[in-house]
Length: 151
Image (cartoon, rainbow, N blue to C red; front, side, top):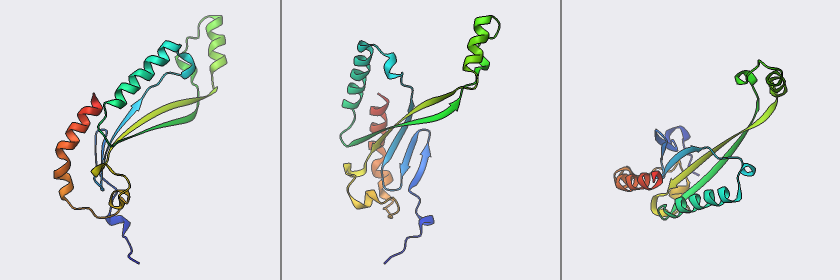
């Protein structure tokens, strides 16, 4: 059985702005999104958001993997920014001061897979050694991928 020295093989080659270059040839673009609360939307607003998502995902290159990750953090509300002068303002300030709430953060990851296949063992295993020619080969593909995601 061959042993792998994990410190010699880093799964992430480089990070530039919101772009991750993986050792296995994959390129991942990361974005943080701000989404409205679902019950705060009217039916038309919900359909408009759905249409925008549909158009955006339809125009992605073939083989793009999209992952949406929602993170909920339990936080304590600070009412320092609320006004505190009149009786009603003081009551509102005292009511919300120190209350727990859930902060929602949404992250989108767009992955351009090398060779359009995630099943291949040399792309699944981030610690497997890959030839250096992948970087030059993917340069034009990465530029077009970043352009399509930005659109």
